[in-house]
Image 1 (cartoon, rainbow, N blue to C red):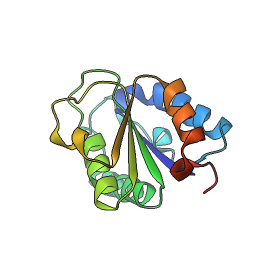
Image 2 (cartoon, helix red, strand yellow):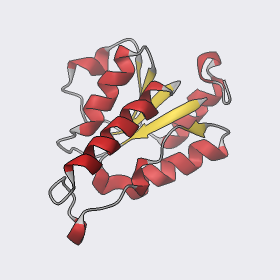
Image 3 (cartoon, helix red, strand yellow):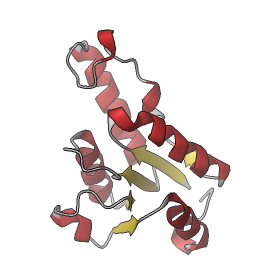
Length: 139
């Protein structure tokens, strides 16, 4: 299965861990956005980025979601998620399975969409992906 892993920039190390686990299970990661260049000074927001670079990152991220069979959104902390919500919306709009890892974001109406599955742990998520006929690796 082709998977896009969404998360907050500050959690990119956790995103890398999740991507690695999914790859070990036989899934293909559509885009590793964690390798994107950080702005000068290592800021966590978009301040300091060249607008053209931001545009290219945004287009890459949209493409990464659109070619995926599933989107895994890491929502383990109560953050004001921004880009992740856009990526979830793209996935739902493209009829792509959305798997939420964690319990943050409960107040969003779209967490109740029938295309969204929720998981408390990475082990639960990987187990479900392995057993679900709609989520088989390499499909």
